[in-house]
Amino acid sequence: MKRYIFCLPLLGLFLAGCPKPAAPPTQPRTTITDSRPVNSQPGGFLGKSSRPSVDANAPADDPLTVLGNPDDATESPRNQDHFLMARPQMTLSYNNTLRFPNWVAWHLKASDIGETERSNFVPDPDLPSGFEAITTRDYSNSGYDRGHNCPSKDRTASPEDNQVVFYMTNITPQQHGMNAGPWEGLESYCRTLANSGNELYIMCGHGFRDKDFKTIGSDGIAVPDFGWKIVLVLPEKSGNDLERVTAETRIITIQMPNISTISRQPWDKYLTTVTELEKVTGQTFLKGISSSVAQILKQKRDEGANSFAGGSSGFKKSNRRSSGGSFGSDAGGFGAGGRR
Amino acid sequence: MSLLSELRAATKGLLFLSESDAPLKPFVWKGVVISSGEALLAHLEKDAATPVQEVELTKFFAPMVTPQDGDDDEARADQARFQALVARLATLSDTRAFRLGAGPEILVYVVGKTPEGDTAGVSTMLTET
Image (cartoon, rainbow over the protein chains, first blue to last red):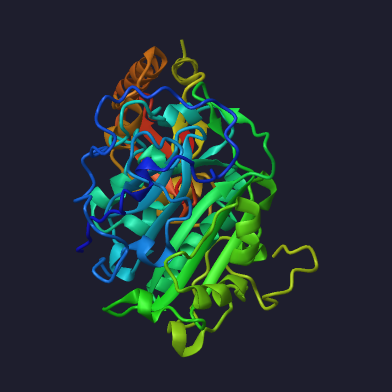
């Protein structure tokens, strides 16, 4: 599987103001101990930093080309709450105050899904000094799962791919009922779509309802109130994917509460629109897409696991079911308790 | 000290870390022989169609005994306890780990044969989404 290293311009480096964080930081910024120049390579994982922009030369499967960079995260180690980490397996904006990513974006196609064994959780080796490298034990005894943003099974083509998604920068505290319930349900559903001839652009993250949030562990990992995800579904083809995104493109947007009691709920109970998601997260999504198309996509609410997206997505109805992943016969209506 | 008490002391307070944390529960099954995954399912009265995957003992425990960046004294102490537990389980004969279920929750039984011909070991739960 061939992927590309890419990066965004360092336009944000000298901006006086900071982009809006995923949540109001309640802690002062950590003192930077990194002595390298502000424009140095943060971790050695980035490609050349001179790429002009997310432009026509960008790789076809660069997730940010299509999805955009919601908080204008940059590769500057000084930008601790919007630190861009672009790797072939996934791109994320790390928040050193929250101790989890503002968002994680990746591209998913059938060849990403293989038989590689699961890796183990490890601190992210690419975080610059001055960042708190969270360990798996920081979650111990917290009552929260180590919730993947980019899921393990989406990166099982090689051991290297799988290891990267077990870096703790890809992890957010999730209640087990959400992680192993509808959150997993949508992850499985996305792989079903990928295995049915589609390629997907996925971005997800977590957010807060108000300024107060609790933390876990001695390093103070914030516990979010909800998780969100945006999935763009395209028939798998070579060429410029951004040009193939139209107002007809299937877009799946969810926001689900980070609570323990939803383990048996189907993922599509939590469908929403990007417009609504922008209101609750304060972020701007789909920046890569032309504004006229994005405006339409942002209003669209998907019809869930039983959707037929016809020719535009190439999605074939599948009999595969996953826990919490299918909705039964009443897609779109959430009455009668919602349980199966 | 009975084997069960010994295993209880060895596992007390230890957590197996996957996406979730789970305690290790020791057991001794008198007069029971577990020769295969099928036999284990039968003994546990679980559906015979439950997926079973056998894992080598040290491989199963590898994440819990392998040092990593950021380890503190507590982490190192737990790794040492896990190492001692693995060593004790390895003194049973034919000790193996069986993963039961298709996920996201996977039950794991580590089983071995005691000199008396009983089956003993520990069980835990993994979350793999």
